[in-house]
Image (tube, rainbow, N blue to C red; front, side, top):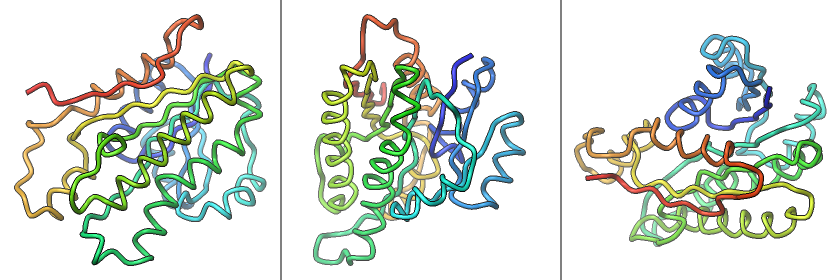
Length: 229
């Protein structure tokens, strides 16, 4: 039985990936931002373990995890949580920048640091669900794109550093995906939202699980996914 820790399991790609792993009998650990969210996960994902830690407060993650029992080994760490606030550079405040960078970049970096011992024991896989914005920035996407460009750099460095320990690192770059976050983006853009136009979260979850299940003689380093129509 493989052991996985997933962030962002509350909806979208994270929820789809978590359900698939749980349904196939793997051991699942879910990071919840607070105790209320952890109780919600316990209902939605029967049999899964929960850990409470807020990616928006990276400096407190070490303390938070020290108060809880952690898995002895991790076959994968799936970074799927994220946040987005659009706006021109001239309007974005430090509060928006700080929150975006914390949740999308610094929090994942710190969580990875804290769990590397368990990943090394299992020769596990770290998957960063990035974004098309991690490859190309568009107007009014500066904070989000900057955090995702940084996440790409984090993954590339981690891959090179941990290769000798047998830890694999994959970055997935989905295009627009039919998730609650995408619906929020459309509201910010002032556009009508039609989920049928975008990638199904289950399709991205299939790619995530493929990165986990590929034989040990190979590693998917980077993979971009775009809507099929």
